[in-house]
Length: 209
Image (cartoon, rainbow, N blue to C red; front, side, top):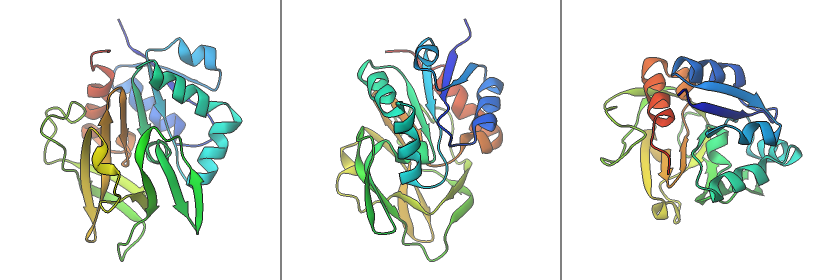
């Protein structure tokens, strides 16, 4: 049976490229903001591009914050991408403002301290040995576009189950997370070619529960 993946449409994210990538990875995709329609699917993808605060506002406008919390509380598989990954954390610090996130993961999203920003282009990821998301994916490069991240210095990030790291210009940051039913990536798997498709396929085909 084909896995049905819901993509939450709240006005942010590379929605159509994400949908195409999921379909290429073998999923049947539902792009919607309608909660009932989304909840008929087995998995949920949370996209996001741009500013942390704008994404949180967009989420709240469609009740996406409530949907995501309920989804995770029920133990249903969720994948956050880029700012969709960032808003899963406790807060974002942008332009001197502290913006509450969804608080599903511990940690703070802040501006990176690299000399060259944004971090844009292909970079390697160091995944934990017991990673499911990166199963049989090693020494590959993924596509990043961002200036903010959960950095190594975040005191709470070490409480997360499984963390994959990357480094840009001497600044180490969280590249991906796996904690229970929640997975998320700072990079864009939908823009990462064949290796991104393999990662999406791995997530789509992970056993439920």
